Image (cartoon, rainbow, N blue to C red; front, side):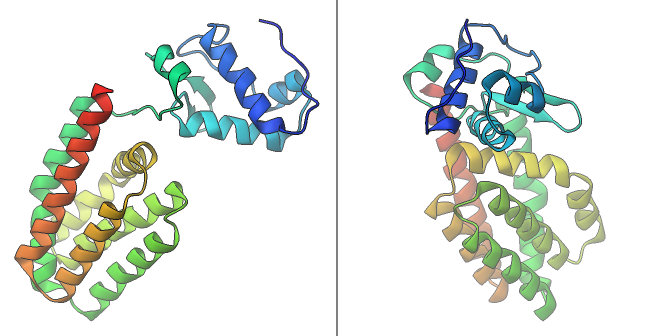
Length: 233
């Protein structure tokens, strides 16, 4: 495929489309490493800012992924027909990985929430509220929202005052962040998600164990339904 030098106004979209075309026609095959940022700027005769924005758009849709210190790569097993029909984000969690995390949450996190509702002190509640507030102001930026989301759940674990649960959450926080980021990127930041976190916070603040557990259970069931629907499309 011939690369066209871009000179028109909508530079980012033009770079994105040409990069996407290179992926779709297998010039950049599944699993292959993309040219470096410098190489892309030379290839398209555009600024690094334009390249970064186009790369971010491809990454947000799951068409490519980035490994820290290694560069960006074309995602494996792309459904190219689906990409051509609509720019629907691609889930980078397998069904097994998603369910493994759900089972973890249904065991460890449910107990964390139960203990937090029983044991949370004023400082714990303030930490949960602070993370929740950051979620609310970041609802249009899934990466910032995800970090606040993770901090919310870590604060809930801290409020359980169970040293083992606290250590477990800290030990798997990178894995947990990736799980949350994938949900927020692919499913979007929904009103249901925000409402569930508000209900969990209020339940812990009111020391209402059953409502806290029901709120988490409802949120997870909503995620399962959404993921199943996404995979069927």
